[in-house]
Image (cartoon, rainbow, N blue to C red; front, side, top):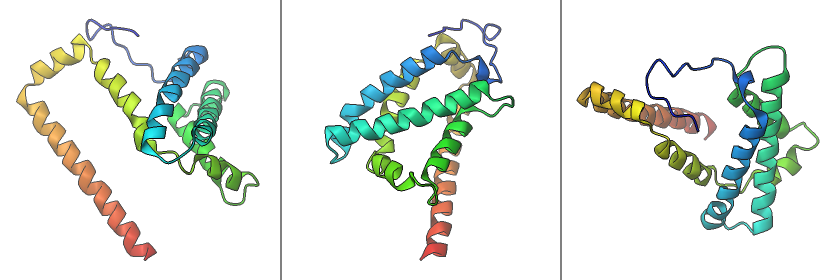
Length: 165
């Protein structure tokens, strides 16, 4: 893990092609393994169902990362991973029912636990210094973002329910 000591040290890369596939796949495998007991707690799936579902999601991530790294045009890895998942589950694809059956019981909220735990542990001195300099204003912005996200999600859900029922 890289630790940045000043704002000058941190230069974000705008291109995911610089990712090191071996390291990324290793980290993804660790998160997948951490997700196994969480899935067993959060769902009624058997160990084999959990392993099959998480393996399927791992393969989707691998395919998305490979597309990100090797295609001649740039699209962020999260977009490629999403597109691979969408294509695999399109109703007219011959494998859609099989693939959906593998992942249908996976609790995605439970999978967020390791990511959120890592995000909490990865807060560096730089972020703490920025937070101290921002003071109480950043708290107000955070609260407004949370409220806006909640209200926006509720509005989308409400519209979806109105049109589908």
